[in-house]
Length: 383
Image (tube, rainbow, N blue to C red; front, side):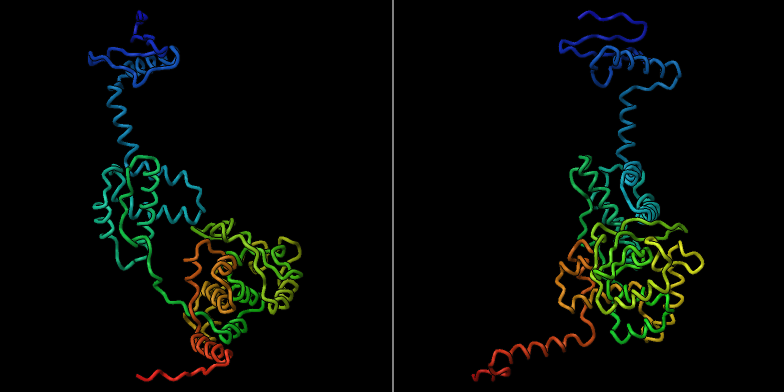
């Protein structure tokens, strides 16, 4: 095909109908567009752009420009930043990821090409993390693994180099002993009247503190004996954010144990403002604001000391509620639904035997044996 004469560059139409563009650069070499174009106008636009680079004295061969862009986008730092920006994360989770990025990932990998992050590199990096901070270490590793998994999905990497077994998990560093019913009674007794219902809901319904702090009058249905968990409040960096609970499974409706209903009815009458949106547990100074954790803990410390349980945290009430539900016969699936967990493994963390429970199980086994009508203590066979 004849070539079109131009004052800068050349455009020609190929036999397949597409247009090709090329020009002689300042280095006296010919430079072609990286691909052909659908229309002549597109080819013209590419040549105009290249000519402007020459006139502005910022030109470099297109091949080296493409290589530079490719190297930049394939570096861990820019890729990881894009990964974080594109994630739909809760504010608290985003803040956690940001801290992990800045403290543990970026110092080691920011300018490393993704393809250069090998299993050996990951293993060396992980070995240098502080072993006395196992949870922090596991979180950093899990974040790196998630980013590189996306790089695999994007076909940048053939496989994920994060292959360390169990590096992303950690054993519970603190053993949680659930409160007994006697201890729970003392805890409630030593809390101020306006916060006793919070302890009861935490222990018998298994809510997180942020879920309890955002409960409103419309979430409690005394007639049906149900509690609707739809939102949670979190605090980070001095900010207060209200959103959906921690996970999708956290949105749930919980049956309130009937013996709590009189206490909740009294709480609604005496300590909750009028209106369906009134908070169940509000700030003393401003009924429109959720109660601050520090306010609860100021009273909680005294109550737990009175119960002889200085180890108990507010969150341990949730653990107590899960154990009570399990002892009442709840299956794993039922427990997951009640406490708002999405995996059996997460729910099973709360299924610890309460003190004296094993003896009760043994006694029940003997009663089962006796109910069959046989001898519950058969003699051992003689040799």
